[in-house]
Length: 368
Image (cartoon, rainbow, N blue to C red; front, side, top):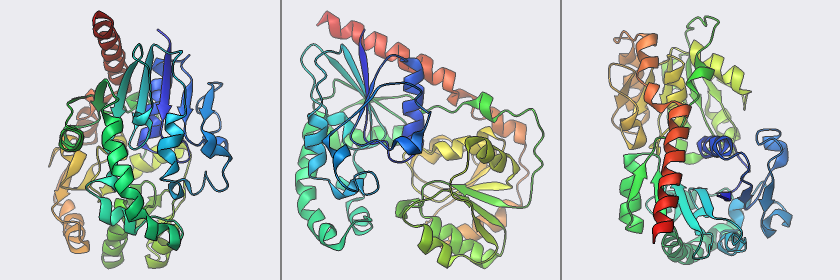
């Protein structure tokens, strides 16, 4: 089988890019097709793997302001030629699923979410796009087209996989398609350290500093609480969030994986205030033996077992987070039990399930 991998854009490093890395391990000879690629950001993460980009790569500011080109992205993803491949495995939360393949090519999409800014989070997303004012005003007009294209492009996918039951329901709602749930991977062996990391008196959040992550709520809560909070990550919200924060809150930018692992292990608890499609960073915290204080919604409901590996708060407000953190000390969490609670999410299990799914569907596809 000749296989190609497709990803939306490689200009940031998050959960979707971690999934792509594992796909690259499963299919080491498969090239990657993506709209835009920032080679300096990813360095050696994909080794010598061939990476093909679209015509957007040559446009000014395409790497730093890729959201400024929503009208061009459907055209760009459709410009790739996959006629030489038996299988295309797309890894998508927006445009990658929209590739055009011929009748002899099986297209499987691992859908992280239907395009959020076109559907249920349309209003909040468009208000917070980090693009020029003139472009932001044109976004509502563009979204009518993007929404239609997104639905039509979903019909091109032969089989959907997704990362949670939460997203499977959204796929059924917006695309009228079923999706098999295969939870995203975490390398449990990486988080199982030989050295003993002592728990310290700080709380932690990790992720891209963008509006929907709701780090502003956590900062507001810790401004009131006065407790130590460490923030690892970067993004367009960085300067605004830093101006909000009091001296008890530290910003570290992005750190190497080995350092982040130590921060996870040393934290008193990990904060997860957003409604996420799944939540790999929360899973990484649990794999490190650190409990999670999470908003009761989205994919976190499929990861966190209240009182065993974390606690929930019910509303996305500063007051709700303050209350959850203050009540957190009433719980007696066992690091080893926390680690055991996520063993089913191990990377090797994910690799086995993805490989079996692809082989099964390829066999079914050839029977038609």
